[in-house]
Image (cartoon, rainbow, N blue to C red; front, top):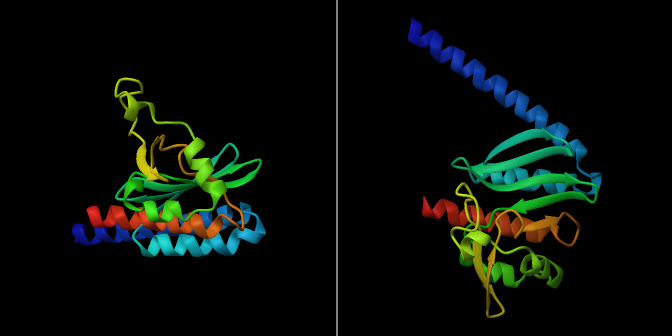
Length: 178
């Protein structure tokens, strides 16, 4: 009897959390510029189908929506005055360099000119809690980039599909490694 009641409580709690998250996603989506809402919703569905969990939090500048795979963040949507940006945590960027090479020149430039990962260059140069950045090769040059800045793109009509390809490639690699 107690076990059944405990199970019912867990189910009700899960349904309540799911309902709250759905409401939060709707609120988050309404904060996205109308011309990008369909894209963000489509990418959200694709990432959820691939097994990512969505965590939405209110932030100073709007909302922060994070997609996690096995409790490790793969991507964040963050709001800035310039618009909504995608921060992709490209831990496995070296495994999808073909996608990086196919990015428009502006996105490649954004990646290559972003700050380097101090900890990849000198393990004692950054905080012990730093997860480390990522390494990839582009046009014969090896880049060691900070995971917080290395793939941080403003959502535009030109960047949208490239953002989707990058984050889906990262999810695919992470899933195949687990």
